[in-house]
Amino acid sequence: MQELQYSIVIPAYNEQARIAATLAGVLACVQRNGWAAEVLVVNDGSTDKTAEIVRTIAAQNPAVRLIENRRNRGKGYSVRNGMLQARAPVVMFTDADLSSPMEEAELLFSALDAGADVAIGSRWLERKRQTLRQPLYRRFFGRCFNACTRLVMGLPYADTQCGFKAFRREAVRPIFTRQRIERWGFDPEILFIARKQGYRVREVPVTWGHDARSRISYLRDGLQMLREIASVRWNSLTGVYRRENPRLHEEAASAPLLSR
Image (cartoon, rainbow, N blue to C red; front, top):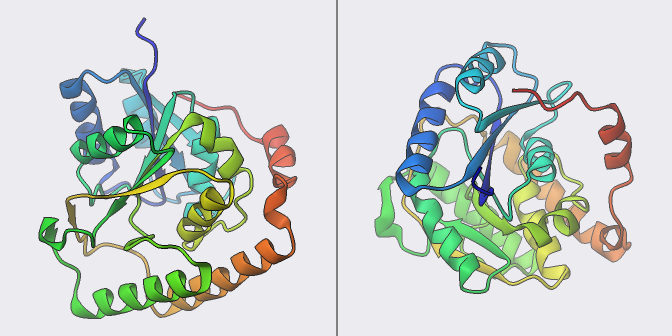
């Protein structure tokens, strides 16, 4: 059996309408490129048939594995859960809508091969790579949020929120066991932690297309993310990020088994 090269984590909440197509696209890309990869779908307490669909696909393809959160916890929690259960030397996560085509993962992997510890996809480094742009109001709020993030957290990246990031395995546990934010604002937090831990982060332009079915609300969720940015600064000042999250050990002890 070929040794694993990549773990691909996909957080999913009520994704019955597209999870089958998403997995088909990911698996096709894995096969075309000859990757030895596992695909971990983290079901975040979905109330639809997401888990049932993934379980059916996993029964036919051993590369697919289903992780069940006990209840809805948020995207940040789901990504962390998958990343910490991944087994390959390179671990990445991507959104269930595949706004960045899976083929673009090669760009992240190349950045890691070139010496980065963390590679993050960016929608803004080369705007011409956007195949379908967001509505103007979403672009406005997104840029405002990113500007606030850069100012408050000192992150030098054009795009912190793109759900397309890859990590060397050595960096996964030191970053994700210190993560505290469990919903939308987790992306800048893990980048902040990565820099604080001394990891080399490289931003990579990727092809990206807006999905109109996105659930994020820039008013409701945007305000929450601003509060979370402030909490990251507070956590840093109070030394929270110097130690792992003790709740993770309790959760691991009571977590359901990884299923296929």
